[in-house]
Structure formats: structure tokens, C-alpha cells
Length: 202
Image (tube, rainbow, N blue to C red; front, side, top):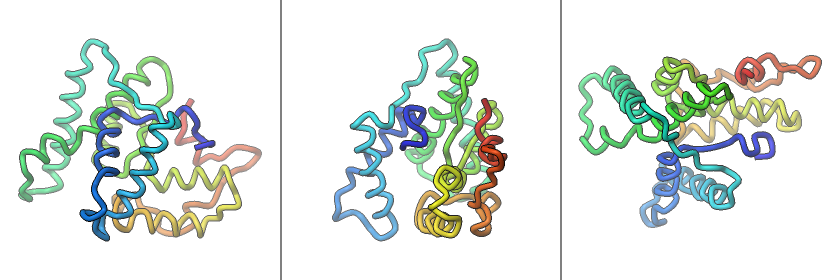
């Protein structure tokens, strides 16, 4: 949190999703979702303390049209990937709400001359974000940045953490997954890290 400070925000829909997962009763938590629920509880504590801010959709003209357009694009990506796999209408209606709001909020921020980066492990969301001029990062990139900020963490430890986090949830697409610990080795020279700087324009 010290590394990102007040720049870390979540969309309202993402906040709702996190709180929903945090409120899943212990009796309904299974091995495949327990880590996710516990992590959600920790994020809720940060939301409640104000350490992570909730970003409301900007009330600008065209915002809802843009949100609908992004939702359609996300669903089209899903349809291309699923190819015949059945999904319920409820899943179809709500699955991408958080990603869509995040992309629209980030795009509006960039349109006003400020910097925004989407944190997502969803390859489809990353591609849709790129169409709207929004750069994206996944949890591996985030851990690598933490490694640059604190050399004591070590590349091997960071790679192990990445593997643990993505084993049951927060999966990163195969073509974007770090192959080994070398991904987490800081490339800083003369107080400049080409990897982090290229991912954080402006």
C-alpha cells in the first residue's frame, strides 16, 4: 500500500464483488475459494479504512453508452473463447460489470490528461481495455513492481507468491504468465527500471 498510496482505486462494481466474496459464510467456503474469500476480507478492511478508494463512474455525457459498448465487447471476447459452452443469463448479465466499470473509469481518467492503469488478470479485459487506450497490468506485473521497490523480497520468493496466488484464483492467461523467476528480477539501472517505467507512462 505504501508503494501506490491514494492512487489505488476500485470501481463501484468491483467493490460490490469484493464485499460479496468477503461475506460468503465460512460453511460455504471450499478449498478452491477459501483463499479468495480471505483475501476479499482483507481488501474490505482497506476499503473501510479508506486506504483503497472507490471510484464512481463519472457523470459525463456518454458514460453509460460507453459502459454498454465495453460490456458488449467483453461478452464478445467471452463468446469467442467459449465456443458453445453454455452460460446462464445471470452470469452473462453480471460477469463483467466490474471490469467494464473499471475500463470506462480508466478511459475517462486518461481522456482528462491523467494516468490510469487497469489491474486485471483477464486477458480478454486487457484486450478490450487496449481498444479504449487503457494500459493494463496483471498480478505478476504488480509483484515485479514490488520487487523493484524492495530488493529484499527476491525474485524467487515473488515467483513463488505469484504461483500460489494464481493456483486457485486470479489466474493469468498462459501467454502472459511469467515462465520463471527471471520475470521478477529488477532491471533498475541509474534509478530507472525500463520494465516499470514502460508500464507506468506519465
